[in-house]
Amino acid sequence: MIDIKNTLSLLGINKTNNGTSIGSESFGGGEKINSFSPVTGEIIGSITETTSEEYEKVIQSASSAFKYWRNKPAPLRGEIVRQYGAKLREYKQPLGELVSFEMGKSLQEGLGEVQEMIDICDFAVGLSRQLHGLTMHSERPGHRMYEQYHPIGVVGIISAFNFPVAVWNWNTALAWICGDTCVWKASEKSPLCAVACQNIWNEVAKDNNLPDGISCIVNGDYKVGEMMTTDDRIPLISATGSTRMGRIVGSEVAKRFGKSLLELGGNNAIIITPDADLEITIIGALFGAVGTCGQRCTSTRRLIIHESVYDEVKNKLASAYTQLKIGNPLDENNHVGPLIDKLAVDMYLNAIEKAKQEGGNVLVKGGVLSGNGYESGCYVKPVIIEAENHFDIVQDETFAPILYIMKYKELDDAIEMQNGVKQGLSSAIMTTNLRDAEKFLSASGSDCGIANVNIGTSGAEIGGAFGGEKETGGGRESGSDAWKIYMRRQTNTINYTKELPLAQGIKFDL
Image (cartoon, rainbow, N blue to C red):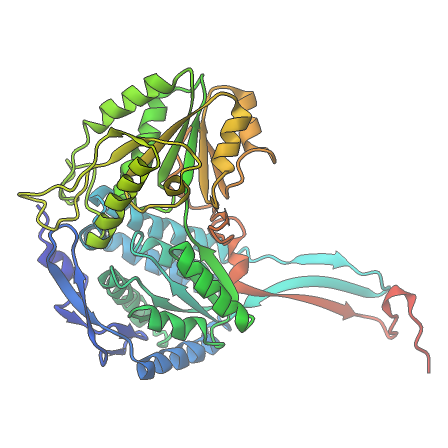
């Protein structure tokens, strides 16, 4: 079994940790916030909440560092990110262990999350030499036009507990190579992961004699988040979390004409056609529904199954559920770890009861596990419920391993059901029929930001833009041209003649 005390020591995590940092300097004047492990229910350690005075120091430091950082060539900034990625390779094992222990996902997933950090660093290094603009023809003779991108400033990052390190690094790796500095408010449910990441950054900063303020952390509840969202010194807020949180953040930032990158809820479905390869279908649906104990924004919530294969899929899936091993996520023999806390357990139980009240049939029963190894009270059984897409509880996202299954007759009906929720993050179709696959990917197909064929809904891949539509928020992170959100666009017109012709043929002779 993993020695968690050694893990914490390797990452520089103490019993009590300063929750506010600008780099080499940290502050600990606020109230203590304890971090509980859902694995054991015990306190791992504590951090201090950021005070208003400490927050001001952070913003001043980040703003000052921005003036330095923006003037460094982008490839040089990429070199710093390369070094951070190299440090993450050194710390992959202990950081993955901390993610698993503090958040509750399996060790394999914890290590996989750190690998995502490494991958986005690699991606960003290449991108640092590809921050391209455009050259355009001018309608005016003797003129040329081009557009370029400049660093935007201080980027505020608000992250969620379910991916306590990767989503932060999706943002920072791109923001850093774009020339921005970053202020990170981690979830109060997984704050030690933020301290660990900052400690790793500090090693890189020290090795390169970088000023404080390029990477900063703050900690606390929604009040600290409010300091960030209402601060006009932060031109961009990237926020990951619930739709409710996103509405508040988006409106507050909009009031001051700031920019928001929102990654919010998902209610993801897999359509299973008559000619689907059921072997990969079951694997994809199973991991999508129970991976991270159903606490991914890309977790599979709904299976929309053709009536001709419905019973077969239902039976195979129910049989697969009986083989799941639930327990300590640091034990690699287990498939499913705990929910994040007892509040999440209550939401899980309430969702099951509500589904029953609306007419749902519980195919695979749930419940809270107790006894040896389950002392935290956060371990639950994954559930399968036969339901209708219009049920209120089906329309809402429950962050728990609850899978709703339903029938369809025609593919058009299935697509309507898939799209018939308020969220629009991830989707998938399982089929060997090319026509069905292409229709699903067409303009009349899935309305989600992610649409997959013959793989499940969960799991982002570095290189593609991650995000969704509708109540998912519309933001994009990670790959493709997601870097542009971290920069400001500028159009330039250059006159290389001795005359000044005006646009649209306007004459203004004196």
